[in-house]
Image (cartoon, rainbow, N blue to C red; front, side):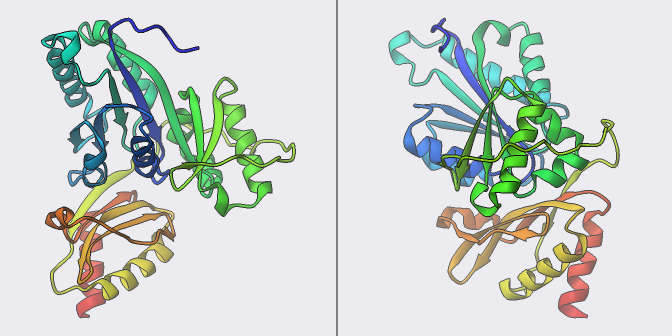
Length: 317
């Protein structure tokens, strides 16, 4: 049963591990009007944001928070942005208010529970914002590996009110059944749904199976870091795609996420990859061209200079 309207801004926190499909899902929700005239906050760990280009045409308002996760290094920026929205709302008469909702799309490295805690501890936000729901997306294709190796992937699921499994059409029912059992084991109180390319998908009748046997993990290990590189103008799309495929084959387990915009004769293409899986490029509107050939790599065990040297060697010998 929904909570009564107490006059506060309602905040939905949208979380999920790197590559789980948060932006795709949110684009569809905005198109369908699921959040009404919501103001969107987009948090990207990398300094070069991409998601604002994809969401801006469907949002009532949009604020970018880039360069740090909202749960830790970017927390102050998040609090400041939320305070600004609260201040603007408090200056308006009720009939002038065009939105009562905020949707925060977190970075794939954010812990929603830490964000919730930051809001509750802020003397202003606690009186002006009510967290309506924490939604966490889980990539069914990569869930097994992520949950076995990444503490954060488990923490995100444990914080959720609603869990949405994505890419469920790409895995057999036996795998999907195990993923469902695992997320329900990690968070018995959350509802579990599914989506394909952002659209709702009815889960089939699945066999009763035990969850994955997950090893104990410490909250530590080598940190996952974002690195942005500018692809030289003399590197064309065909050459870059061959290099990227080779890189993911060799280092896909370390390069957790790749995302960026590459300019081609057909227009700017959105490039995305999750570990060793490259998604089909998506043609973007012309206004995205100002971010051409800027690619963000998110992973561990490498740095930007390693990637630049590798690309230079591949393209020029």
